[in-house]
Length: 402
Image (tube, rainbow, N blue to C red):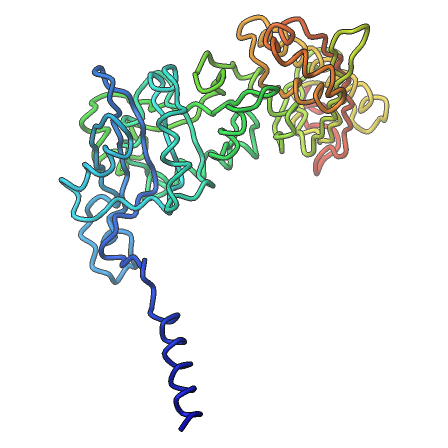
């Protein structure tokens, strides 16, 4: 009897811990949101745009889709971002669910006012993962970006995500930044954040461009494309890098995976150096009581294209191309860094963090006025470029038709 009573007690205790998923979410109760746009309004409120998946249009072929849009846009304004999200339930039959968020787009006006406060919810909410990418709508509102239909990917948010990843890997003029990386940059004393810009290029009738007809054309009148990098000082946008400055940033911060560089041939014409591998070693130091940075950039690549008369079968030709690449690239890096120092006075490269690693005691004094120190900071650059391959052919066929 005593044994049976003990087993009964154990069974009751066991059942108490196996009562099911108390916080479960049923799919038919959720509005899966893959992209969010944040804008500011004239009266000081937030305009929040949610790009929500239309489940009946993205399921399998046999699901009985109606041919309608694969996503639906919901919008609301509020004095806080959280308030705007909750107000969306006034028109959405399901609660906005951002756990699968892929893209956060911030309008330029809001970015210039400051993004710290509106980002608090996304960093705090337990339903939101921090592995989505954040970009800035250059010269426009975020809502204008999220309303453009896309052709190759049915869901626009997926196309924005994939395009940014591909661009970062192949061109190195953009940068995929997660929420954690953005916040780390905003609170850091020695490295300020950057975000990739994005624009909606709309040609012709806007009503057609924003409708399903846009993706039915071989040359869509509305396209979304990424631009260069936006520079932030703490949580406020202060300016935009140009293409060369953006690529320089990615090289220095070891985010360059691959790109192509046009270089002049020794006797005129052009060749293309295809970067396949890049690594930058950054060292900070205190010299004569003042901070200084040494950059050692090592690059491996291929000859990607030849539009001049050179003999690639000769080792001295390869060496000459390497010298030209090193000289051209060093000049580009030097000019880009000087322009950022002069125009923005914001350390986006992480030079302050390098000084901190090299001399923590000196950094305690320097960090109080680092923007001014960064403005006059000497940066010594060394570039080593090596050509590994010249492609599947030796000399160009241009040699035979000169």
